[in-house]
Image 1: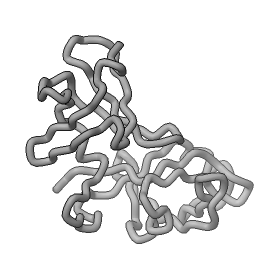
Image 2: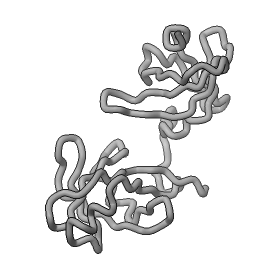
Image 3: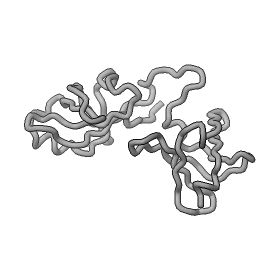
Amino acid sequence: MDKKLCIATILGAHGIRGLVKLRIHLEDPETLENYNPLQDAKGTPYTITLKNPVKGDWLAEVVGVNDRNASELLAKTELFIDRDKLPALEEGELYLEDIVGCEAINQEGHKIGDVIAVENFGASDLLEIRPLNGAKTFYVPLTEQFVLDIDMEERVVMIDPAQEFMD
């Protein structure tokens, strides 16, 4: 499979010795080094060594980056891996990225839109839904209260109460 997944983002420089602040998008951030080398969007490889956590993110060393000027150039760089490097899933598990592209339906089974992204702005995972009626996209918390079912075979996500988010 050729699909690339973003598993980390370099937020910016830290200190004068070339360390970077890294936001890791893995369930267990400490497994990031298992995927080295990571690649940016252009395919440039980066080997990352984690140093220590800091306020929900991580300080890290990038091989070949030895000063602040070099680390500043990496700010906002997204780091990717090939999808096939991820571990196999157990029954009933899924990767959040797999939900993107699913149809969003209501409890009656009527399509109300499409899942266009899964975001996390700090509190919890959110599904971004593009409604059929052309209205502005809306977010649904990815919790049992609002996401009633995810059927990956049918590629549908049942949400409730859909109208509450669309108004």
